[in-house]
Image (tube, rainbow, N blue to C red; front, side):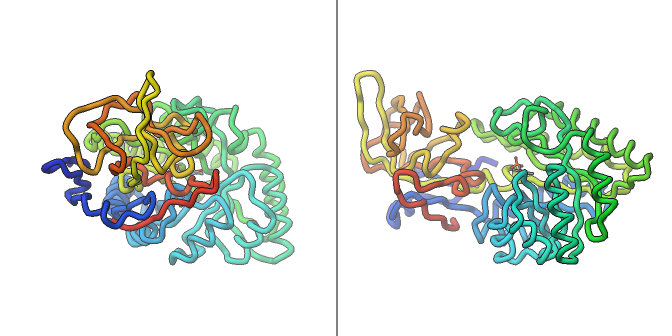
Length: 396
Ligand SMILES: *Cc1c(COP(=O)(O)O)cnc(C)c1O
């Protein structure tokens, strides 16, 4: 399957022509193909549930994309959600997810956010520090509300991804060290309302090296065995998300075989355990299913290079500026001839770029371009810097 093609010079996405989008253009717009989201969600579920136990469950990481129609597609596929703030809990509830389908991660949960989780009775809080557990226990006793928790362990794996999205190394703020476990069990033992269910890990995002996950899973399995043998029965094993996708070449075959290998790895380390296995994929489900349509405002040559100045920059798509991330850029209508461009936005920062030294078919002012594979961490990271409007979101 090839997602992006040209027919008679017109750009096609998933076999649908995009030319007509120019006619209804108001300002930069993220478009999402919900059928592709469902397809990806089903594919991921099929692989991970294979040989799985009936009570395994996938919790889509809502921070990747929380547009209503996208969430509906994900909900229909049977997934719950992994949230990282009270705001995300509200978004999940508004979009039909029940509290029993919500798990709450993140290092900075406030009193209000924990109180909200207790009042709603969400499925699980993934605890990221000793102080957080104390806060949860205090609030749960005050409110007399039951809550399940798992302890997020930092497995100390040096993940091969951009340092800003590596989360499972001892350098990172995420999770807890195994040396915290005795204290954590002490705290939870004293509580009537907080029930410890197991452990969680999430070692990073955009992971394409399975050896990193192999190392993390191996360490986690050892920990589970040791806890079980100490009488701390592990009922839930949350293995996080993080599986990467290919941004530079549309290679779905390689991506799917990576997913299959990931599934095998999960079975290898956790297949024989009786615990509920949980997964938290974000990017893998939604990244390919979205694109950002924007317009060339100016083309400026300064004698060194040619800048294509778009009406979208780091305010609408932060990933290139933040991580040096690569996104394909396609013109809506292909012109003859080629040139090398630097695609930049309107923001008053030199770090405001979408792509550097990029070969493209020839562009003119007023042309439309599509920034591909922006269904994950696109709109959810968009901001109002320089007081530009946020992009529009729509279903395609
Ligand atoms: C962001 C995040 C995820 C999802 O990561 P992806 O790389 O998008 O799959 C899962 N779990 C936690 C705790 C996260 O913070």
